[in-house]
Image (tube, rainbow, N blue to C red):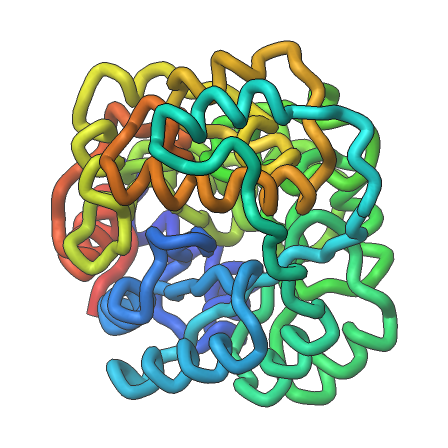
Length: 359
């Protein structure tokens, strides 16, 4: 076990200074999980236990972000993070998924063709909501902020964390001037943050990726992907990570918004079989394998967010009917190590297992 003295020895130059900037006690971050699993209640509970809670706002309008922030602050006065996708939307649709989607829509009792979806929220409007909210941390994935946007966040005293799935991306983020880098390993559930090169070339394990970035980039690195317990946290610290970020580990907490059918699947042998798929959104993401992912294996999809819009009604109907064979169930490779614990209890357990000082 990593002793308290070992952790404290690291803190004066890296961990402690970083935690002071975050305004939290523990180097444990609950990952943003847009689309349901993260909630104000989850973020608040993690914050109350000494970690940093996060809220994925990628699919929310500016008004919805305002409401989410207000709800979170009403529950606890602790720091939290807001997360957005850096989108370079492609309106073209080089692939036609209509036959596959029509078959599944019919099974779910939907018309063969869907209604036009609402356009995705404006990133500029979303970022304006983040600036109004002034969270302690803003994290982003899928690309790079504009220098002017980074300047606005800095002026609002918001720490900025970018997501990297490769050393090339980490170096680009460091050159931009972010405060820290989340090293998203291939084990992580949900969307891949890749923005340089092909996704298939950036499926690097968390430990290898963390060490590469720590060795080459001189800013704090947050290890993310497959970390579920104190042993994983100690391993990340041993490679030089300043903090860790866990998503799947929190999905069975009572405060999480995880769909009941998804929760049941997380406790089944099915959760051992995850795949990286573009079936649901058009962008590579890791989730539990099912009929939907199998149907799109080796099949091209329209890009994000076109496929996301095309599958919106199907995903909603599948969730309403508890059809796990067609549901989107983002999950990381650490799922077999899941624990059903309240968020605060889980944070304290993780800290104790990692040998972190708890006050």
